[in-house]
Amino acid sequence: MSAFPDAMNPGSKNAPSDFRRLVLRGLRLIGLIVGWSSILLLAVANIALPVVEVPKFVQLFEDFGGRVPAITSFVISGRWALVAVACGLAAAWVIAIRRGRSGHVTSAITCLMLAQIVLTGAALIIPIFQMGGGVSGGPGG
Image (cartoon, rainbow, N blue to C red; front, side):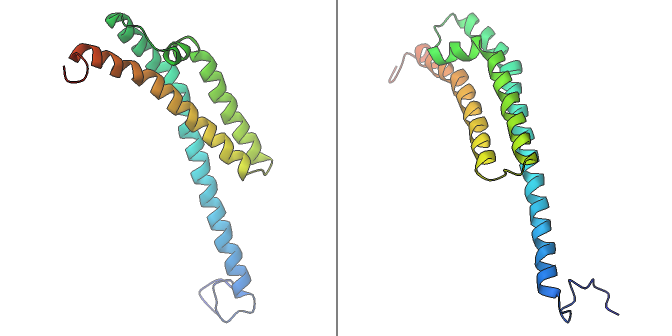
């Protein structure tokens, strides 16, 4: 009697296919764990940026009295729409996984979530660089 299960026993007639199936099941589980944790992290970031960080930046912009770019005013005025989009994308990702569409669909949704984070972050950071340029006197100043 072997200490290993039949799939791990090299002498077993079913060893390669059973072992391969076991490895593939483990890899799929790892993929699901990484996927779910990634989408959870992206959803939290997509919700936290507009809810927590945008009000801080609004106060900063008001204190400096500077004019903000259009993309920044869009993010400031539409922050609850961004939260709704983030929740919708997370829900779409979960629905796609539950229906077994885990390839291109979930990759596209993940890319959209990343794009939303980049858009929101850039919209909040661009005015800081503009204000910094004005304070220092611009290039060479």
